[in-house]
Amino acid sequence: MNDLSGQKALVTGGGTGVGAAIARTLADAGAEVWISGRRPEVLKAMADRHARLHAVTGDVTSPEDCARMIGAAGRPGIVVANAGAAVSKPFHRMSADDLRDMLEVNLLGVFNIWSAVLPALKETGSGRLITVASTAGLKGYAYVSAYSAAKHGVIGLTRSLALELATTGITVNAVCPGFTDTPMLDDTIANIMRQTGRDATDARKALTATNPQGRLVQPDEVADAVLWLSGPGAGSVTGQALSVSGGEVM
Ligand SMILES: NC(=O)c1ccc[n+]([C@@H]2O[C@H](COP(=O)([O-])OP(=O)(O)OC[C@H]3O[C@@H](n4cnc5c(N)ncnc54)[C@H](OP(=O)(O)O)[C@@H]3O)[C@@H](O)[C@H]2O)c1
Image 1 (cartoon, protein in one colour):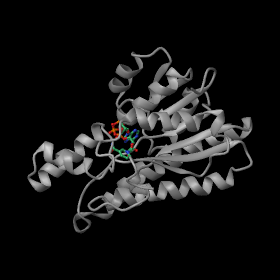
Image 2 (cartoon, rainbow, N blue to C red; image 1 turned 90 degrees about the vertical axis):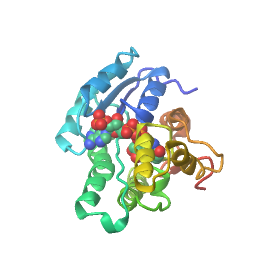
Image 3 (cartoon, protein in one colour; image 1 turned 30 degrees about the vertical axis):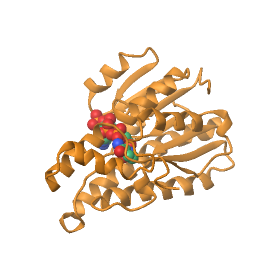
Image 4 (cartoon, rainbow, N blue to C red; image 1 turned 90 degrees about the horizontal axis):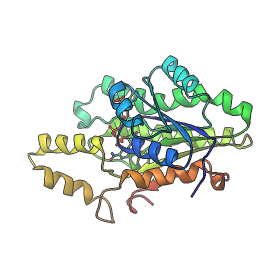
């Protein structure tokens, strides 16, 4: 296992779901980990469970908040841009504002937090920029065109920045989960039930069926991929979009 003792990390959206699993995994590996999000009570409840977890509130759509979060975390060397949100609507009901909202949190949110830490990483000549994108950044899905557009954008950002930083000691990668068992998935299931009249079991089955392994991805599996990308052994891995989807995307 990677030993991250002495390292500092920031995980946006670290209070719930995939972000919480990543934060726990990095802290278990020895890192001091700051978790961020907009709801202080959620972050506090999570931080209270582990001595190496620390809470800092902030909205990733605000560059000022991102600069403050990076400062609070003491210029972390590992920054996991995980915060995100999904809206599900058929294209003909989607507004330009829906698209802007998706780009704001899922794409600009990543840009804001990475931009805030990059000067410090360049000074030290090392660092790990990681984002939790999605298989929706690698293929299309019906009814989530705005979310998918934003996640495709994140993959482009990752690949291009990786090339710009290739000689600096800083790697830039995206982890792309398929449907993962988190609060966001619960919202997706509720939405399918509303739109189609299916019950919760049927809605869950429909999502599970997209995964060739016939199951949902678990948050800890995404976290283990992030742990590996955070360690010294992944130093030559950059610009990648790593599919964690049971073979749904290959
Ligand atoms: N679940 C899936 O099936 C799945 C599949 C592929 C990719 N993903 C991606 O995985 C990431 C984590 O999602 P999840 O499934 O773990 O869902 P989740 O539990 O809803 O997590 C989303 C997190 O992002 C935070 N967040 C949302 N908007 C924010 C903002 N503007 N500023 C700061 N924090 C914000 C939320 O905290 P606050 O509300 O407190 O701010 C929350 O902790 C997302 O990027 C998502 O797109 C999920």
